[in-house]
Length: 92
Image (tube, rainbow, N blue to C red; front, side):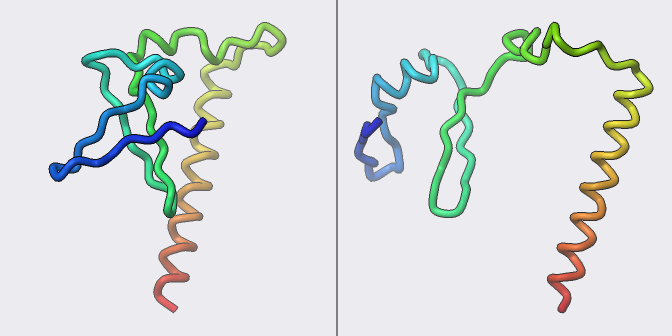
């Protein structure tokens, strides 16, 4: 897609119609900008109710609460280790 729009003196722009259609953006919707180096992603903010069922996969068995808790604890521990490593590297 090669959609373009011009930035005004106030830093405003119009999101091209093809982009709005592709993302399902309508008047009043909220969008989020995620910066990744010299690129920016435009993401439509979704209502939590729109997300219902997106993780459902009939080919996988449901997780128990204990399995979910363990997965969350593992992810937090990995994130904690990453933060410590980055902090220590920054001190060198």
